[in-house]
Length: 275
Image (cartoon, rainbow, N blue to C red; front, side, top):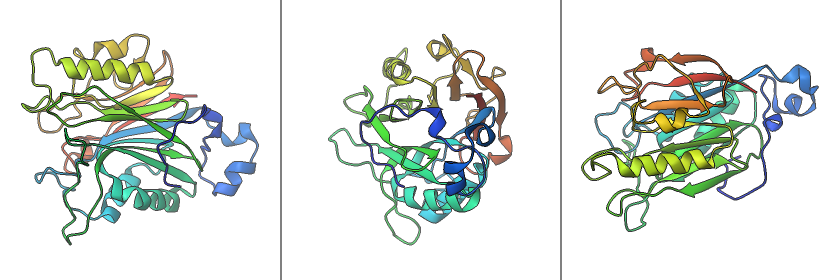
């Protein structure tokens, strides 16, 4: 189902089916047989919304969904930034068709300083694609989501974090550092937002932080990051600003997909995290 942003009770990892069988099998199979030792989490800034230089700008919602789903066929959890909320239903259908599992998708849209929705550009046929968003997709039926406002410059875009209910998984897209969005010395708003995101998270957390590892040092305290080699994730400037964090000792493997550097101005990051 398409997730609604509601406050709800705890979501335990045990509710996430993690094998490739049909949804009814995921609900009835013995727990030990159905659950591999790790969860596969992917984060990716799709750059689909408003930047005309990005490859997925003005692509249809079906095309956006296809590009995500082909990268995430084996994933259990997906963090997306600069996605378009109008593609949520297409993404859910595409993931379910490719994986044979039920999925839930929730989005938290950006807003202008006056509170009006920050719309994605229409597709090349002129059809609306919804609001530019940070999006969370989880393999599981009827997963609930919650959204939390982050502190943003009064003159900049309003941003939110989105989490599963219970905050087992949380993602966000922090301020960009552009002249209109936290360009001040020391990046005060991004550091404030990072602190708010980390305070929310009770499990796996990540996304596009728009901070290099040294500047994002607070996130490393008490957590392991997917890629200790700090390989670049931002194509334009060849620096690392995309992350997946989990508790100490939980990260089992990391893959930074540089082969997809022509699909967006960011590359996907895949983390395998112990349950």
